[in-house]
Length: 142
Image 1 (cartoon, rainbow, N blue to C red):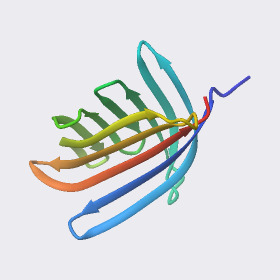
Image 2: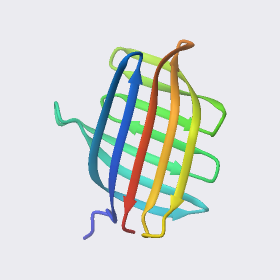
Image 3: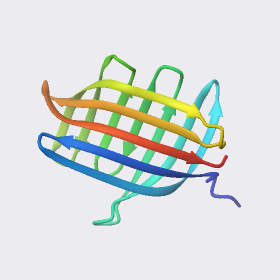
Image 4: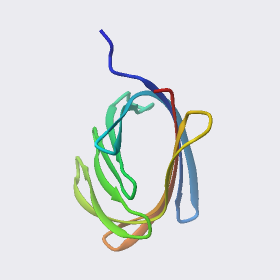
């Protein structure tokens, strides 16, 4: 019986918070498929510190990306290029509404057969910019 995983992903996230810059990279196996003119990507993200699992779901259409991360912290985001959108972050300490200003969003099928997702956005909490996030993802296989 298959576990439904049909792809490998390489994820890199560049975060700038004020003067602080950080980069996180990891690889995971994923379930990636197309349905009703949208692409869906499901994968588990493992926290290196405490081994907590966050279940990630990406729903990709021509003009939008919806991200749902469900784990110790729950994140819901919708990204549309050059548009302000709303989301939320739910932590053990409470619920925070977020604002997202997406300035980069592309999802392409490359000549090598892989899919590339690039996302850039500014995150606002309580009207204050908390950081700039650049996500690069390569989806291999399918």
